[in-house]
Image (cartoon, rainbow, N blue to C red; front, side, top):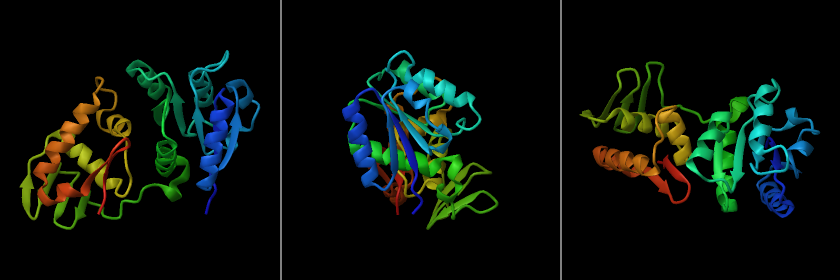
Length: 235
């Protein structure tokens, strides 16, 4: 097993130790730093992912992330913000800086571990562990049993009968199918499907998925909800 190296940067020493203990139990190598300034003394190019608090000392987590994104050796390193700053504006700011995920405090350790696993799987730096899409043909057709999605024609059919999906429903379905076996958070779905559009409420995503499930009939049952985590397509 390839042991990923994770850096945890938080000025709460007890929280650093809790995260270090639980992530190491999952098989990761973990280094901690109690400030962004301390983190900058490390060889940052050796880390596969960084979990960063926002409110720290003179250099905030946002400021630290901006530095990381300007350096060629860390420009693509995945970042997860774990912070008590949980307003929509803060989340948008964190994602705009280049974060791959944003987890408000207080959080469950199980949620952090799950999101770390998901971000690492999607990381461009580790193509060997990216989510495979074996059901997608060169013509852009994704097939799962009697469910067929044509990403080129933007069409969907169930057992040969065309299903009318809205653009957002279609985009969410393609994302879930291409990420089969992985739970995607609402933030991840929002970032991929709505991109830089207006702010989208969690409820909007929930409504789109509820409508899509009904339209897909029996295949809607494969779209699962993990309370507190997000959605996935699981056979």
